[in-house]
Image (cartoon, rainbow, N blue to C red; front, side, top):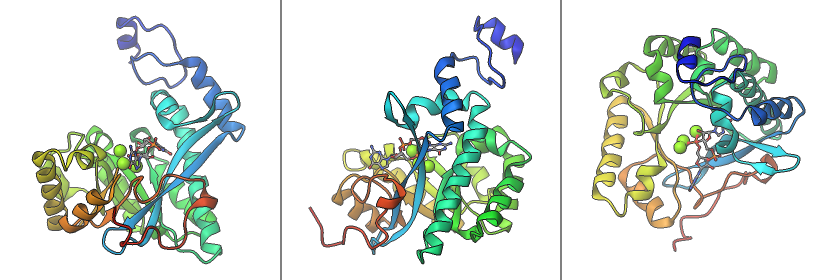
Length: 281
Ligand code: C2E
Ligand code: MG
Ligand code: MG
Ligand code: MG
């Protein structure tokens, strides 16, 4: 790793830096202290059953409440974090916070399954599974209230290792989703061997389904594959009613997108059924 870094002429170094790409070290250092000083927030975006439109759970999405720059979306700070050890500490915090919130909802009488994004580097740690199980135990949250979202990249870097980790989680009841499905390089042949409950069709397919027959066909194929393998299908990035209706008709199980709900702080999550079916535009 070191030699590679020197070859490309990148001279900055930070503990755990895992890429030859340049990172904004000042912002990364600031993120680490922001994390320790309680400046990160989790927003939650509901997922809805495609036909009934009932809320079926939420996805936790991290934000950085920066003292000077305001509320920052993950695109601003996650790519750098993912090239360093900061991502491990950040993910520990995200898991703890999301499960704590699930416990608060549970105690208030609401059944709210929570999905958490797990970066490849996190799953690569031996402590990943025991840490997640310990957090569930600590918060007294049933394992099936947690879904971990992994990307195809995570799977590909080490399919057998990752499959073993995911199997261990699933054995305890944690659900597993593949995020941004269709944008990575998962060989379809690998899919039947992966312990997965859910495929999340990437927004790029969903936004183009009305303009491009090819994208609509790909969505139909993903649905067929998921059916054959006994997996649920989630469509992300649903921005209008015609798209929602067509996805439901095509057989998508769950919908997520601005049309249904935007990510919000936990207190603003609508714990009653969202936009009714009749609200057709
Ligand atoms: P993702 O996991 O695929 O999350 C969905 C992203 O799409 C979120 O962006 C969400 O706000 C956005 N989105 C949802 N519905 C719509 C829609 O209808 N239209 C459009 N244009 N966008 C929509 P966000 O929150 O900015 O997060 C971006 C990505 O950052 C996430 O993509 C995920 O890969 C990563 N991320 C977010 N939170 C975390 C986290 O806590 N840990 C890790 N490791 N990654 C995270
Ligand atoms: Mg996700
Ligand atoms: Mg996604
Ligand atoms: Mg996505």
